[in-house]
Length: 163
Image (tube, rainbow, N blue to C red):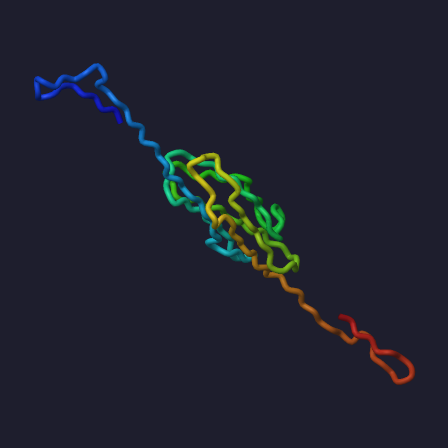
């Protein structure tokens, strides 16, 4: 803010040579990021979804660096998630899909864990809610059956079952 003295209404008071001053207003607002798993995943039915939220909209696009871990395998159990995501300028949230890949393996439920690591903007910081987990529910089951393949005879043949 620049203030300039131009004149006074009192002839006994004159404007001196130092007639201008500047005050700089430093913006100390910081946007804080958090992440949640907004949709859990299920094989053959539902893709998962993470949502990153900022407490304040920032006027410039911000790169968010992610750490990706969990028991699910990127490229096999789900489409790989990039190491960075962009929070667009003036936005307060961005979503990251977990696109499930169907398979016929009986592997149990698996997890995709995203952790917010850092940002490209010093005015945007990672908050304490910096990690979220999407669980991919496995839909594959094994079916067992039993068959008597050999009948038994006393003192002659042992019986045999095949599973």
